[in-house]
Length: 309
Image (cartoon, rainbow, N blue to C red):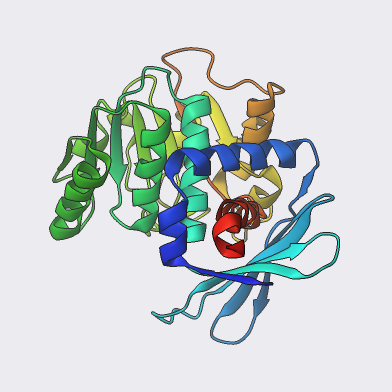
């Protein structure tokens, strides 16, 4: 029987600690070759593109996520999970929450692996769904004592801060500038739709860890080369995907490409992460292909007793 899952089931079932743990397992599986995850593929269709990310957990399942760039306000992502032995469709997830929580979970893994162990303050630039799941996941791996948030809309940043306090129990405040959001923060999240830099590296304190979730390509990035120049530790969740961006991803070009590390390799102990408290570390999130399917498989297994009953 094929299980159909929508956003309410995802929200009710996937909490932050288990999502972060699932993404940690996915990254390790990709690093050791058990999760086959090629870079995304796109089909131009005139006025937009259909984009496909696929993954195969060897011996268990395969599947894909599809979404489009037509810009329709009601468009939803679709994630399909196939049984690896029979090819049968085990589950289909429709909506935004699975993909958003997947990205947040990857960010949580990066914070856990790269931020200082005593990191307790978080600054956020952006107030949308991606910014929320980054805070949601970070709170699962660090004992946060305060969150500051800035976005262009005063109403949205105020509502975001109120949500952090109400749902996560963390003191949070909206601030009037990006500088005020990130100054003296232990962890910084960039989760905007900006195509120009919203962050000045001079505003970051020594030892800050940065999760960059938004645009990060040449001539279209929410941060400038100054952030990459200053980073002692530069990491992504998929070097292969980073190298396939068009236009190219800044961190995958010279002179940065030789320093770009695989988060899975850091988790496995095959590449160094942070080695000093004052180092600036940067995680360039690209959304490792197959991780949405990995998370859907975890979700289906969690729901299995309820579904069968």
